[in-house]
Image 1 (tube, rainbow, N blue to C red):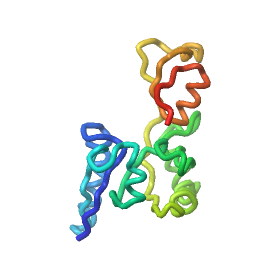
Image 2 (cartoon, one colour):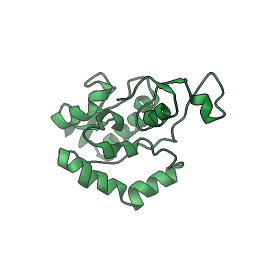
Image 3 (tube, rainbow, N blue to C red):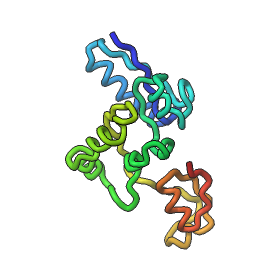
Image 4 (cartoon, rainbow, N blue to C red):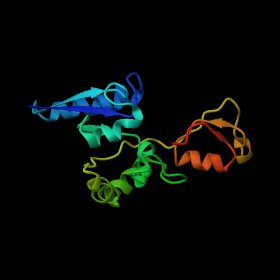
Length: 168
C-alpha cells in the first residue's frame, strides 16, 4: 500500500477541503482497492495555502491542488486554471477547453513536466463573483471599491479603479 499526503489551497472547514477534496480523496481510496491511501490535510497543516505548489516540488506533499495565482511567477499559464476573464461560463466550456481542445495536455507537458510535476486536471468553478454591500450596476461603481481578489481578476479590478487588497 502507498500512503500519499494530499493538500489543497483551502483550509479545513472550507467547502473545497471538506466537500470537493474530501470526495476526491475518498474516491481515490475506494477505487484503488486499498492499494493507495490518500491522507488529506487542509492548508496550513503541512504547508500554508500559498506554499502547496512548492511543497509538491520538494516532496513534502505527493498530491496537491494549489491555487494557480500563488505560483504565477513560476508557471503563469496555470492562472487559466482558476479563471478566464470574460471567458468560460459553464462547466461544459471548461471541460471542452481542458479535455477536448488540449489545454490539459499543454499544461501537463509544457508547463508542469519541466518542473517535475504531473498535471492531473483542474478543479473547475463557476466563474468569479463579487459580493458587495453596495449595488454594482456599472463599471463606475467599482471605482474606489475595496476588493480582495487574486490575479488575473485583481489586475482587471485595479485597472477599473478598485482598491485591491491582495495581488500576489
